Amino acid sequence: MHVVTVLALDQVVAFDLAAPCQIFAGARLPDGRCPYEVRVCAVPGARTTARGADCFGLDTPWGLESLAEAATIVIPGHANCLEPPPAEVVGLLRKAAARGARVASICTGAFVLAATGLLDGLRATTHWNYAGELQRRHPEIAVDASVLYVDNGDLLTSAGIAAGLDLCLHLVRSDHGAAVARDIARYTVTPPQRHGGQAQYIKHPGPENQGGDLQSTLEWLQRNLGAPLTLRDIADHAGYSTRSLNRQFQAQVGTSPLQWLLRARVERAQELLETTGLPVEVIAERVGFGSGAVLRRHFTRHVGTSPQAYRQTFWTAAGPVRMTDRISRRR
Image 1 (cartoon, rainbow, N blue to C red):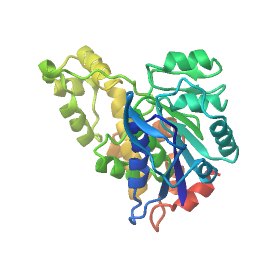
Image 2: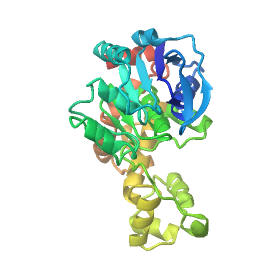
Image 3: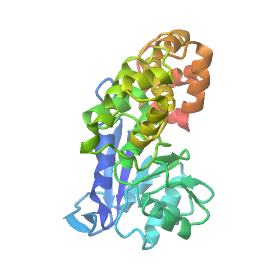
Image 4: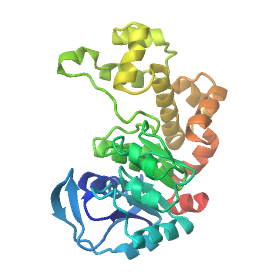
């Protein structure tokens, strides 16, 4: 069983604490099994906060010693992030990383992870309001305040609050594929994938401008991924000029229309590779890439592996790969 330990320091942000618990404990494999054991390990007397307001105390059977058994450690944000973390915590996190544990931070939890020195020389993110301070305190880290999360392999960081959900779904997707991540996203009524490079702060149309909402166009695109869509086609559906469409997409979605469409096609290809035995050439046609060569190029760039290798990892004739097999392949 893959143990996910969520580290609760005093004044831990309640949302940041609950998000990984909900995602990892709620994930289900096709046979109904939960692939994760979730533990909350708290320092003595830990309390939760919602922007400075005490919410509740924590009573958990796991203490810091649970960090030694974790395959994944999640560090939520906490209100005392600008104070040095306990030396014991820093030491335990370093030991966990040295033995191969995956360590991820949510929001201002990046300050705790940065204190270990593990992020030195790497790119990282945190809540946009604290990014400047993180950079000032840790100049060895390349802080990027413009993204939702950064994946450095076994060291990951995410932006504030809701971006923690995106990060946790990304981890589930990395472990068990897009279908499992999509199911838990649907259960928690969460968007199935906001990619890490999407902007932290996206402007949405106000009540006086509901006509600018792109939701119907996004749904239309999802239904027509296999069609040879052009920018003009998308603009006509949305009722914009191509120039206005690009501006609205950047404002509402945080990327361009064609980049959004490209990623949606890759995600659909992931799903088909996991759940069907269709040849790559057929999948390429179904998702709108036209040829296997084009699919392979975009898939490898966005997923980091080839379609064939992805299928071998997440699908066999007997069904999805078991977690123990997945862990052995990662190591």
